[in-house]
Image (cartoon, rainbow, N blue to C red):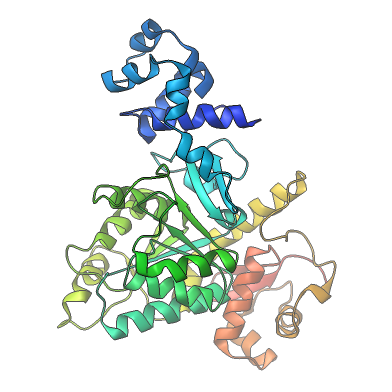
Length: 393
């Protein structure tokens, strides 16, 4: 895990972070090295040219920029500062409490994130859904249906707002819950432009649009593989719906595996070229999934761990995104179906199938409720398809 050491305290500190972020040839890795050696962006900016050279961190373009007057450095971030004055516009740095914990764990986390929309959503349990930009109708339908069901179950769906599977997943999530779009451009624009309405809906419904790229950054091919590491890094798992052999979605899947996250793939016809990437992943050991239950079952342990982390953060005085943790003190906070499921689960483990039978609800409904309760720390999955209560009535 990276080890940055500064906590934001005021707007001048934000300026320091932005200036270092705009410094030529300073990417996420170099930024991290600089902060580990110098401690803060301000310390970097205030260091002498000779000290910066002795650090062996910065290349000549960076050294030349850092040697300029402060007024010139500030000019480089004017667009960012103007953008920050807009509604729903925020910058979160690595050391801000709002920075997503899972993203901190990747090898090259962005030093800062530009966010439009709900910052809290970034700390919710997320599943990345990715796939072809040119899926067939079945692929789009599957992506939308899986995203809707999983979002209804409590997972935030994260994707790249590209055409095709990404767009279908975002719309599916919006019909069931929340979604996050990670873009490969600055947040002063929507790319592709035809997803402008989608971008508005994501923000209106409590989601977020995220980028590590400065305001004014135009679409460039090299930026989209970089943004894929953020999509997988924010998520506890990645689902590949349809992907050709050379699909960019396979890059996201590989990154997820390198980051130690779960990867899932939906199989398709052996005659469909859009299935070959998914089948390749399955041959390499990625989990084949046919239903959302396959994903929920595999992620249950991770969800339980995240629920415990949310509970701990709330106990320290912070307000968790799930607003949960601990025992059920007010059963009125749950709908009637959730109460029925809770009542059917005892402190001795019980088969999920038995819970379904006792409740008289569908398997899909019970599985979704159980996953939400796991995130809240109310129930836990046990071996053999069983579940048990963690707190008294």
